[in-house]
Image 1 (cartoon, one colour):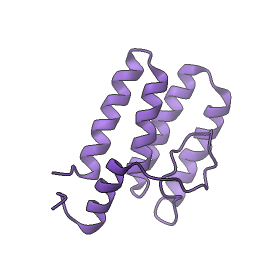
Image 2 (cartoon, one colour):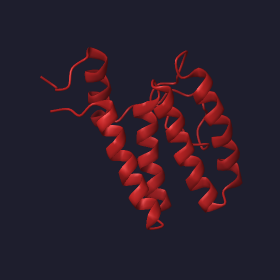
Image 3 (cartoon, helix red, strand yellow):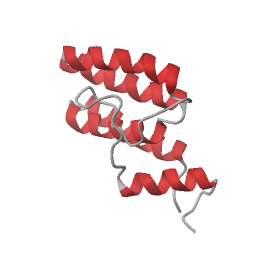
Image 4 (tube, helix red, strand yellow):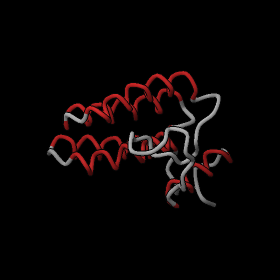
Length: 121
């Protein structure tokens, strides 16, 4: 059974939250990159993933990432329904316009969502 986008997003979000609380910021950010891929086509989830990344950037005191996430929060709110660079991981270390390869497990979830199915069968 393939989870829904919402279920997969919630699972990755919780993993990011747990990692962040224990100071594992790289691990938390990696989970948030996965939430970003999952949530790109849903405005609220897209914005939420960037807010999560902004929180990590703030905790790291990473000025470049803070500025990058602030601009991405606004762009996610404004453009999620119009156009997204599919697979983009959402961090300030990559161009906000660059499409990227989607991990196979996330691709299966997104494909099932587009087909309107909840399982891979």
